[in-house]
Length: 275
Image (cartoon, rainbow, N blue to C red; front, side):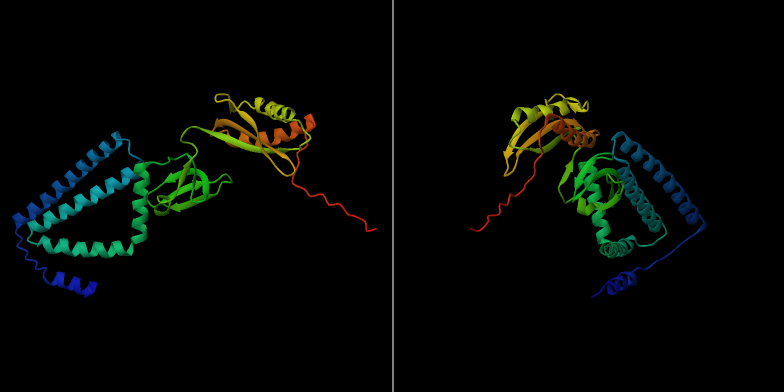
């Protein structure tokens, strides 16, 4: 049995017996007017309740839309019952139609469900800098179907909410500050204190770096051709990239002033003459 057979069976049993008089017509009109007024009043009350609950705008719109559709559906059933139309068959017919629509819009409904999950759990808000599903950027908008990100190079990326709600999300803005981790390589010939002093000179000159907790500079590892040093300093999320690039440039210049060579992996080849 296919969908067409089901619909035929439902509609064949839908017998409409209308017994309309002037009084019943007036009653139906009054019923519709009262119903429309009640729908407007109830919708406004629910909207005010949602505003007091500080629900996100997208979620408020969705809840109000579903609530309004439900009220209109109830009004149609009441009016149909008052004029002698059997509501049981109408409900069954609409249920089958709803099933067909849900199957056709499966991906869209999945995105809407993901959007509701994001709006309720709130892993991020508009304006947060987030990394998710291989994308890093500032959250521009959170809609029911898609979330919009603006990247550093001003590209807009739209990610389906069904995909976004099932991946790892890193929110760099939630705590208000981020840690800058940078590694620098210096020659084995450069004394450790000289290298650390050169880096410290740059760190102390950057006002955006937070002093509590105190920035740290450590010898990190012994490489094949150099010694690696790490700098860890905290700053606000807004100043992260400014501090990041200022450190990069400043350390290079400071190494040059202090005579510290920034080495890289290299290979020495010695040619032996045959005797």
